[in-house]
Image 1 (spheres, rainbow, N blue to C red):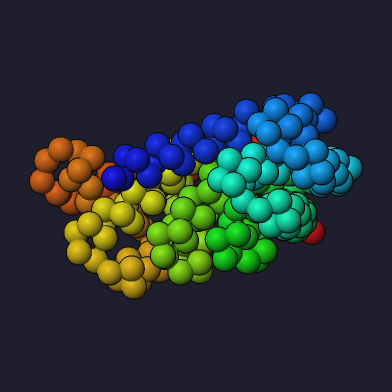
Image 2: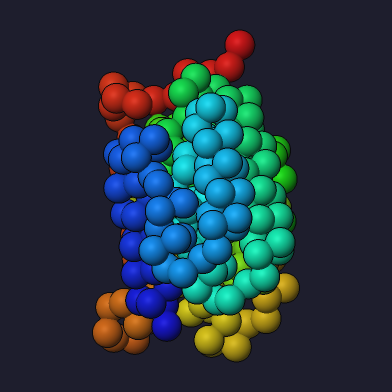
Length: 242
C-alpha cells in the first residue's frame, strides 16, 4: 500500500511537469471532447473556459483533464461546465497564493498542485506556508502534492502542512518528503488512529520513525531518512517577500 501511495505521487508530479512544458495554447480541449462524442455546445463552453484561463495565465491542462474525465464518467453537461469553471477559479486562487508566497512567476506544476491542495480543504495560508518552507520552486509542487495526499488520508490540514514544512526545514529532500503519505499509511496499518497519526505529525520528525517494510527487517532505532540541508547556492531558491 505504501509503495502504491508513493508511486501515485511520483506519477502525478511527473505528469504535472510534462504539462508545464506544453504551451497552454496547444491544448485543444474542444477537439478532444468532440472526438470523444461530446455535444458541440458542451465542447464550446469548455473551450471558452480554457481560453479565459489562457488569458489569465493559468495552466489549461488541469481544466482539460477535468473535462475529459467528467465526460468519460458521463457527468451531466451543466454540472461538468460548473465543475471546470470552479476549477478555473481555484487555479486563480492558487496562483494568487503562490504570488503571495514570493513566486514572481509560479510554474504550472506549482499552481496545479496548489489548486489541488485548496480542493482538499487546505487554505491559501497553508499553500503559502508550504511554498515558503520548500525554499525552492522545484520542491514546492512536491510539498503541495504531499500535503494534499495527507489531507486525503484524513490528516488534519494544519498537521499535514506542519509535517511537510518541518520535513523541509529539517533538510529532507523532495524525494524524501514524498515518503510522508506512506509513513502515515504505515502507522495506520500498525493500528494507530488518524488522531494519533495527526498528533505524531504535530510532534515533528515524522520521517525518522521506523520503517521495517522498507528495510525488510525488524524495526531499529536508525532513522530511515537523513538528508543534509540544501546548500544555499542552489538555483531556484525563493526570494523572501519584502
